[in-house]
Image (cartoon, rainbow, N blue to C red; front, side):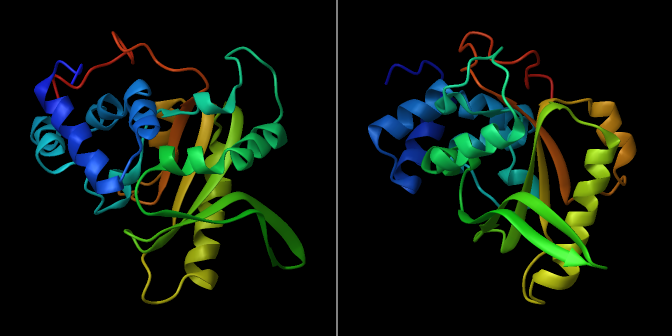
Length: 220
């Protein structure tokens, strides 16, 4: 009841009931500015829908956040760590990570290997989204994203679409979770009609509730 904005309060009420959040989980989602993060990528009509119906997941973009807030890992913002250490922290806090990922996610595996032409490749994390009926593969990058990272993810997604997913399942989603992101680089590298591969930043500390992100959604 301490949420002043009526639309935001309604959103958290709906999500708490729909997801059976505990008080701790509700507090975590509010502290991480879930409503603001979802609203950033939506126009005014879609933002209004959040307060009326909650978070509806119908297509790939509906399930995404940018940034993802991973304060539960306990990694100070300036601490140096390897991608392997980052991955292990996520596995150790898998319940929290699933909550941050959002609705419909189930864990499949880590360092999932596939092989062709006698070459081996490993995907950092593989999930399945029951609502979207598709695999979601995640690649972890502790630095700034590169066009090579995007090309690698395209290969991973293509492999899953052609050799892993069933005919009745939807196309695979690939998410590159990175510390720094260049939006122009991502836009130029990926196809104009891209609906499968996405890049999102992650934060290791909670954003400020007064001004959680550099931009707002008020003009969308």
